[in-house]
Amino acid sequence: MFGLRKTLSSLFTRNRVDEAWFDHLEELLIKADVGVSTSTALIASLRKSAKQHSITNSEDLKSVLVDELSHLLSDLEPPENPLIHSAAHTKPEVWLIVGVNGAGKTTSIGKLCHHFQAQGKSVLLAAGDTFRAAARNQLKEWGERNQVQVLSQESGDAGAIAHDAIQAALSRQVDVVLIDTAGRLATQANLMEELKKVKRVITKLIPDAPHQIVLVLDGNTGQNGIAQVLAFRNAIGLHGLIVTKLDGTAKGGVVCALRNELQNPSQTGGPKTYVYALGKGEQLGDLELFSAKAYAQELVE
Image (cartoon, rainbow, N blue to C red; front, side, top):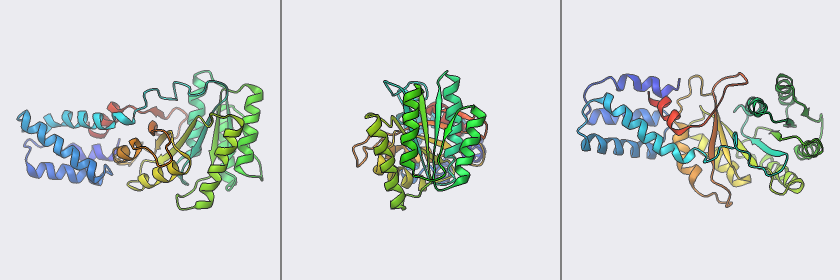
């Protein structure tokens, strides 16, 4: 359950809709990381609907809010989600997974692996986090759980690991390669440069790869999520997001706040960025394809 839904439950049981009610709702939306501009726009639209349809009961406005949120988030739902529709014309399809420390990259890779295997695809994992031995070990554990090979090196750099993984996948006709990377902050210029190098290595081997560059974003990150999206997108381009840790206390509104940033063209001329999936637990199957309607309903109802 998202924290916002729990907070809104009492508000939508009040009978009368008035200015104080709208002000309270706007405050709750902002506190839930929806963002000031997005919250203001939602409240303006709700006020308009209430006036047009003479709605005075807060319960009747709940469905209106769900519809408004669904419309707002519909641009973030990919026309063809690559978790279902492959973006690669030849094998392997290469996914480069990036994000800050603690966002849940390695766990998300384990879930992605399980997801693709359920589609009958072969998968190879690459332990590109060369800074933390614990990260390599964690990825190996996910590999064992999924019964897939994990390529890693005790020393060496992330580019070399990506190179070896793709070469192995090419020779074995593997369907999907998932490349883990070290967690890094947007301000760590040297590590962002390393990501660019990894991307160049991949592209030299397969010109149209990486086919998917995915940022794993902690659902509790709040407004800092915008800075993360901008930094990674401007450095290497981003195709999609996996928003994690939405099974507990996450407020959930961060996806709404990201909407404007994700749909604006990046400074690098890269693709639009979509939300691919939501992480809602620690089990292999706890990866849910993003649906604007379902997300809006879960935020509110």
